[in-house]
Length: 66
Image (tube, rainbow, N blue to C red; front, side, top):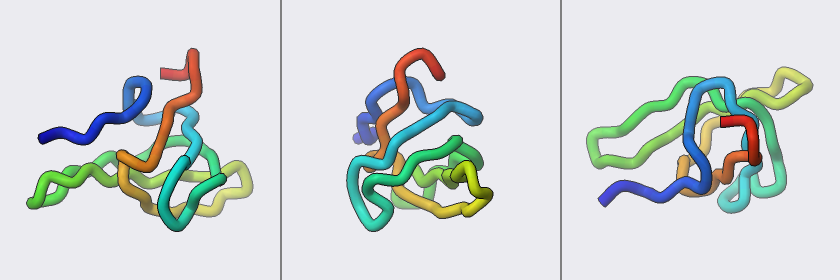
């Protein structure tokens, strides 16, 4: 079963984290990966340059950026 992400997950799109450890943060999607178990992980780069990894199921895409 594939996780459902609100909006189209694309490299370079703006996103908001709505769950997990990084809830409330936002940034640009980079480096989309699928693990052996099927979980989709992404790297999010914030405007200040800070990077963090999160699960795609915890992310919603901003309208008009995908």
